[in-house]
Length: 73
Ligand SMILES: [Zn+2]
Image (tube, rainbow, N blue to C red):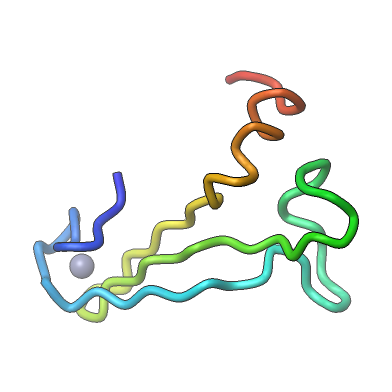
């Protein structure tokens, strides 16, 4: 559940959001096998400014690849 309105942990309304790269320069690829080779893979993150609770979301454009290529839990 995206908490773009209030934090599910502490109900704070102080929510920050940012797109962050899923592939760091020297870091692991956190979204392997999705998107094209040249597509910029990012997460949209939501962070509570009060308690620090954080959620990561895969953008809609990559979800088809996730459904096709990732094992279902
Ligand atoms: Zn919070």
